[in-house]
Length: 606
Image (cartoon, rainbow, N blue to C red; front, top):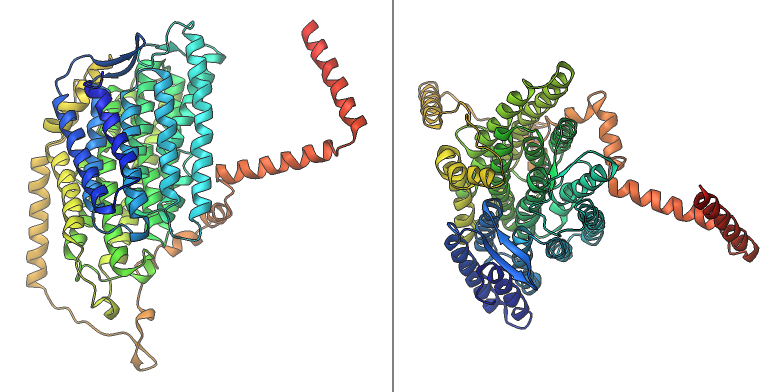
């Protein structure tokens, strides 16, 4: 039993996590690194495996198919690269806890994607949420405890919905099996729809879909940057979207109405989060909202009902983890050197941190959907798939779908606008003298962000040859979906040539017309202080003042749209109401019992 490869992918990191409780920090780092080497080797060896399973008491607990392998490979890859960044730079006072939690998170994440049995899936899913909470407690800001509490309540609360959903699926499956890979329950009645939406709440909460996304921006701001890159930017996205993909392939049989609802929720996730990202002055929170916004594209692709868009949604899932981790880690390098992630306090760092600047620029171009980087091609597949699906719908549904598509494309344009702000505010703009002593990021940080940047390029130029042909299309076929006959009209090589020519032309024009006069800012005839410089965030302040956006932004600041805040107020109000209804008087308590019994008998007689 202990020789089973699937079981080893869980047991090895679990054992290392336990050992790391007692070992010195340097040994912890070595063991975690060795663990990821071993799990990565096992994963590579499983590439051509067929029907690999682990059974316990005659029940299949773990199994591997092409869909779970795709998610498994993504988990090992991202965990390994982020670990390289973490080997040097984690805050000294949290290093021991960090390197005990890291392999634990890896074990539980592997367990989620390998679980075929509902019970094992639920255990690993819930425990992965617990590590998320424990990582958030390592934050050093004054809001970290509150953020940890919020994260735990939203993620933990969604687990309760998942339990009910799993129970309903078992009931609808006539109690024949607890397998998650062969139920295919048609959505035909209230119970089946209820089960679907209970699963949906769990998937959206984990991945960060609207309206269960509000923990991610706060977590991004208050938790250690390495854990932010590992969890809400990477593994939690993988797990949440993995569950959503399973829902649409092996757990439920989806109809057109559900397709439209999910696409609408995806479009809302995109536009609401990107509008919030545009006005942020904290770099972490800006990236946090974009981590939410990008989930919307995955939701739209997987929920659209188009095989091409479904493939694009899976592709965007892995693309997002790559460039989003890159962006968080490059910001982490800046924060560790400057002591801040406040965009208003940064500027001109491209001069002293050139490698970090280049990696961040690649990540920004990727997330903005600029070809030939990876973010463009996956979005392009989603757009074309949705257009393809729209052609098969009736007129009213076509208008509905087109509106959602327009919102998604508009969201992509706003993403580019907000990352112009992000890059300018940190790396461009006026160079500040107080950064003259800032050094380049350590080699391990440059290496990790460099690897992620390289993947952004490789998955953009060779998208069809590497990720699609080797991982995504086999996952579709293994899940019972036919491969799309048409991947999309896109020639990355031609795009490189065109963009290269445009870039060279721009350089030539610049060199022949280089007549730039640099003037200093003056205030009252004297050299102005650095605090009076023009900030990269100033232009975007106007967005916040536009009508009717100003009202919506004010409501957002007051957390009127935060499901955590809403549920908290509702719970407190309900508790106060119940306190008033039952002030502790015995005769009133007896009256409630009598009335309750009468109601019970009346209902029973009917």
